[in-house]
Length: 511
Image (cartoon, rainbow, N blue to C red; front, top):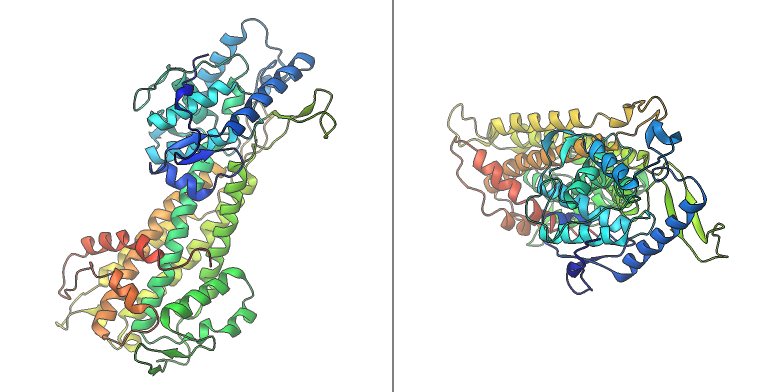
């Protein structure tokens, strides 16, 4: 077998995959090309032990995908040329359709699949891991298409990857060498949801960043309209006893300069009186509506992290020492349904619903900013010219983004399918959930950009003495144009979107 083992990192070279500790954040970083990848010797040894154990088991009993066909062909005994059979399996399962996936999405898939193989459950030849590592570090990406997954294994995407490793399908750059797939490596390699998990990791990472920035932007809106910080006081923790709500309250108190009782003091030491006894929902209900976003992000992150480090292959071959719970061959083997991604689908669908609810509060806050009765500023924050439109159309753009978020939040888990002559009678459609979350993440960032442009303009017009960390947040927003005249605000919105990471960095993600 030609393996490309020379590219295997030994540590100290970026991200080393060991099959046990890969995180959502690391997946995101690697997908964006910021991290060289290595493979630990422990992970490689674990894969080798799994292969040896799988070979031992296969000599004693029938094994799905090795000695049998797949799907409804599970009862068909495979005879003849085993190498030809695995090649035919990969070619047939590479069938797909739709547009090509982005480089970031493909990289995320490859990194996750390599890490999963290092958990030691697939039974593949360790040379396949070396070949995959070389593919990643050469950035020689396979042409993975959009359609083909239903949340029970990304068979098309991974079969295409296998054929690319073998040199049969194209890659975006030259591979250092081709990788041979043995007669037992085909199904073992493609039995994974790595592409779906990659999409999920990218979506969750983007939404986590935007969700932190959303609190800073909301604080700017709060300051511009003289909000009432009692809504974030310690009493709220008893009324809404959830971690996300507690984090929202803590961040907002810090940002707007409030003590635990809701009393604000500006940078000169002056106590600030709220403009209202209670604010509209856009500000007052932030702990109750944005808090669930943070809680669902925490849950989705935990699910992605767990599955990225799990041997979900079917069948799974776990080599263990004799006497430590192993079977007659010194390990554990199981035919199972770990490929069914209901946990992931539910986590992502729940996250999408939470973001959709919080998106409505963004619209509410923008309405507060442009309403003279609440902001004491000209309608639409215009320049005073009669009939000035000001930021009017930002609200339309925001409504368009919010509508797309709501459409994307329709639970994919309501889908199902019965396939392969009826023997596979359900599907999670987690793959669809992940793609929907990617779309939601993009529109949510654009929605927040709309609020940011309007909130920064309102603060500049108000010229209130800053409190808390408002001045710091406004300094981040210095690049936004200052003119009030009616003009095309497309560039402003683009610039505001680019400020999201810097605003998110003002919030401690480990609070």
